[in-house]
Amino acid sequence: MKKTFRIGQIVPSSNTTMETEVPAMLLARQQIRPERFTFHSSRMRMKTVQKEELAAMDAESDRCALELSDARVDVLGYACLVAIMSMGKGYHRQSEQRLQQQTASNQAPAPVITSAGALVDALKVLNARRIALVAPYMKPLTQLVVDYIAAEGIEVVTWRALEIPDNLAVGRHDPRLLPGIVTEMNLEGIDVIVLSACVQMPSLPVVAQVEALTGKPVVTAAVATTYALLKALELEPIVPGAGALLSGAY
Image 1 (cartoon, rainbow, N blue to C red):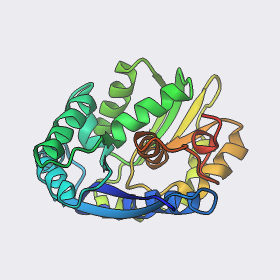
Image 2: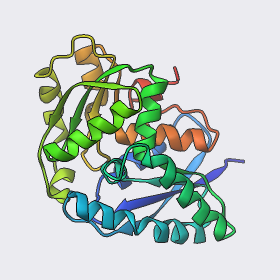
Image 3: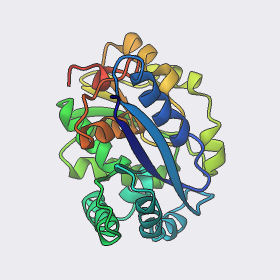
């Protein structure tokens, strides 16, 4: 009998990509593995990617975790990397623990992963010491992301901030532009490329292309989140066409 897992997603209200890319990867996995997945979301208000608005949004995550635990989801993914990283270094551990306690308080304990923690963990799985990073945020927020990752022991050698403040516009950014952006960066001595340090900026269609172009492993916030969700469910973290991390090698 095929086992069906319920995936809970805590999503910014203006996010349109997390609920397309993560399901796309897990549905692609269904073509090669027996497990099945359903997807369930709860939203936190957020329109513009600014530090104050991100902090207000993060305060709503407890409510979202409770709502999703009502549906008895098997795992929860918090889908805003910069909201977590802008709250202070290492905050993903505090957030995950607190939200997991919310599910337990509702007699529906479930593991919680954040896209921020998932990206950090993915880079460690890939043995990344020196990385290149692309983010849609304004430069000050991107610097917070760079500093957050550096505090986890990974050097961000080169990075590009696309400076798109409106979160809906981030979701409309054409992923076909990303290979060109990456080829303009100095990738000498880089271990891993973070093609999108944001679950809202679409990147999945070009992950394999950028790996072929550069000869380097490519990861995105959404790919890292999918890897973490599968690991939390104790399932083999393999998805066809989603890059090195989900190739089965890790």
